[in-house]
Length: 574
Image 1 (tube, one colour):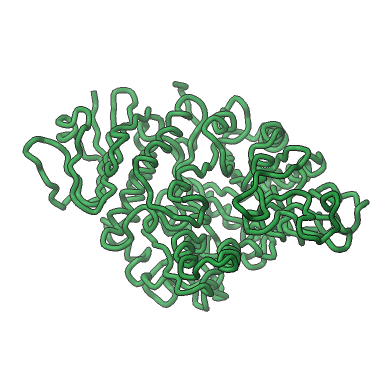
Image 2 (image 1 turned 90 degrees about the horizontal axis):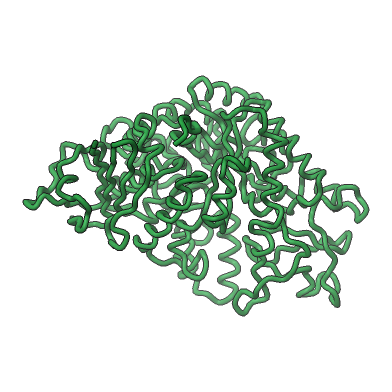
C-alpha cells in the first residue's frame, strides 16, 4: 500500500440542492446566502466537501441543469460576490466547494446555441448536433427524426427547428441541446470556463452525465423499445469511442499542475465496474471517482417507473462486486440519496415506526464501505418521501412528462401516481426541515415547493438537541472515517452473501478488523453463519444504531441477535 493516499479517501461530501436548502430573502427559494447562513450546521456534521447543484444562470427548465451562462450566478441564487463569500467562509471552516459541471448540453437560451440555430452557415452551427430529416421524409413528418432515439424526459431526442428545417439533438429536455464534443472549439471553450472557476477558488467538479459527451459516428437508430416508435440510443452515447480521450484532455488542459487538493467526480449512467476502473485509475488522469447507478436501479422492473421491492441479496451482490472491482485500482463513490433519487429511508428503510433506526442503519452500512460517502441534504435528519396527493403536486419535468405520457397511453391514473410517489425526483427536492417554526425555518415567505408536513418532529433543531438522533449518528460515522484508517483504507470482505435479511462485511487493515452487521428487517433477527461468531459477540462495540443505554438481547450461545433495523460496528485487534 502506498504510504500516502489521496485526501478524499477519508473525506465525506455533502450535496446541497440550493433551491431547497435555505432561503435568506423571503422569496421562497433557497439561495447562496442561505447556504452561508447554514455553514455551521455542515461544520458541526463534520463534512469535508460541499457539492453545489447548479447555480449558474438558467431558465430553470430542468432545475438549473439547463445553463444559459456558465460564468455567472442565476439571480435566483444570488451574485458572484455571494459565491465568493461562500467559498471563503467554507474554506475558513475547512470545507471545500465543488461545482456541478453540466457540459453534455446547454440551455437552448445559451448564446452559443442562439448563434448555432441562427443559420446553417453560422460559425457555431457545429457546436451542437444538427441533422436533416430522415431520407424520404419531410421535416416535421412523424418518423422524420434523424434517429429513433428516446429522450430521458419522454418523446424523441430530436427537435425540429422550423427556421432552418433541421433537427437538433437533446438527450434530455428539448431546451437542453447536446454540445458537439467532436468540435475542438467546444472543448476549449468548456476547459476555459472550468479554469475560470478554479481560479476563483472552486475545489473541483461533479460532472453531470459526463460519459455521454462522446457519440459514436455516424449516429444510427437504436433497438426498438417495446411496441412504440422509439428506440434505445444509449449504445451510441454511453461511454462513446472518445470518452477517455476527452477526459484525459480535460485533465491536461484544466487540472494538471494545480496540485492534488481538487476533486473530480464523473456521473456516469450505465457505467460498468470495468469501465470505472479505467475512468478512476490515477495513472490514467481522468476522474477521481464515478457515480454509478446499478444499486439504485435494483428496485426497478422493466423501467424506472415499474417499481419492485429491493432484494437485499441483489444489493449485496452489486455493491460487493463494485468493492471488489475497485479494490486494487480506482475508487468508489458511495451514496443512497441525491437530487435525482427518492429519500433512502422511505425507499430502502422503514419511514414509519423505525424511521430513526433504519436511517441510521442505512448510513452505517454505506459509510463503512470502502469509498467516499455522499450525504444529500436532509439525509442526516432522516427526511422522508413527500406525501403527494395528486398529479398537480409534482413539479419535476421528468415526473410531469411521464404522467402525461403514461396516462395518454391508457395507464390507470392511480397506478401512475403510485409509481411517481415512490420514484419521483421531487421527493428529494422538498425544503430542508430546520426547525418547527412555519415552513420549517426554510423561508419567511411561501416556499417554492411545499414543506413536508412531518417537519414539526423531523427537523435539524430537534435532531441536534437529541444525542441519539440520526444527525449525531452521521456525525459519529464521519468522525470514525476521519479517525480510523481501517474505514478509509481497509480491505473489504462481504459476509453472508445469501442471507436475505442481514448485511454483513468486514474491513481489515494492519491487524485491525471491523465487522459491520445490519438487520434489514422489522423484527429481532439472529445472525446465523457468521465466521468467528463467538469472538465477535464479545468484541468492542464501536458504533451502533440503537442508543448504548438500550438493553440488547443476550443469547446463551454467544451469537449476535439484532433488533429491528439495527446495525452494529464491532472492532477486533490482532
